[in-house]
Amino acid sequence: MFGIDYITNNNGWAMAVVGATTVFVGLAVLSFVISQVHKLLDAWENRTKDNAVAAERPTEKAPARQEQRLPTVSELCSIYRPLVEQLQEPFLLTQLFEKSKEMDLPHPHLSIKSLQEADVLVARGDGTFNWNQQKAL
Image: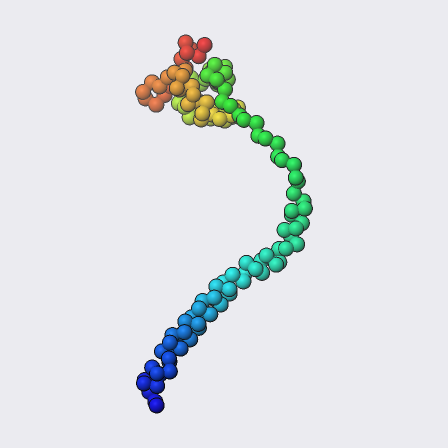
């Protein structure tokens, strides 16, 4: 017997499928292993460094950060009043911001915004602002 009849009678098709599947799976596994070799080599090279870093780490916790709070509006008024007195009214917020940065005041954006919300800094409508003495007390 020769030809397709011989292949069919002796399970040739099944053997061909199993062989092709075996080769395909083997090549897929091999390509995956090769693609991960760099991680294995990095771990092997850094094995002494990782142990040294773990030994150097302090076991005690870092001190908790103190929570910073924004000053109240009355505190902000007492801080920003001397800056506003240096400016000619009406003034631009950029001028006040620059002065507060020169004085190294914390959170100038938030502080100026708080003063605006409390109507201590009053917009004139043309991009300039005035200091409201009545609200600043």
